[in-house]
Image: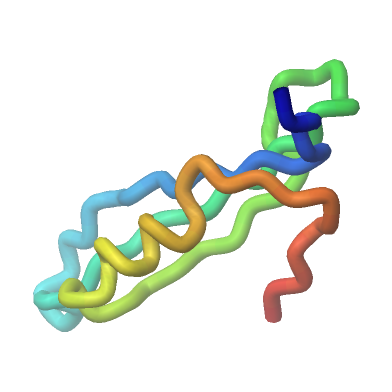
Amino acid sequence: MPKRKRYFFSVIEEGIQNPKFAGYKGGRIEVYDRKSKSGYACYEARFLIPQEFIDIFRDTWDFKESDKMPYII
């Protein structure tokens, strides 16, 4: 059985109600540290991307694990 990595990513989509952003999806990526005892995300990053890319974005980040904390600008 492979070793579990330290960080776990979760993509959370949120509703966008502003009509100026029709055709976009927004939300956040939550990063969980398995060494943390709090049970809460240790970091989160917001996103707003064109709707046609949401499936690729989710496939790339959702339920992924890493031993390195992501550096997101």
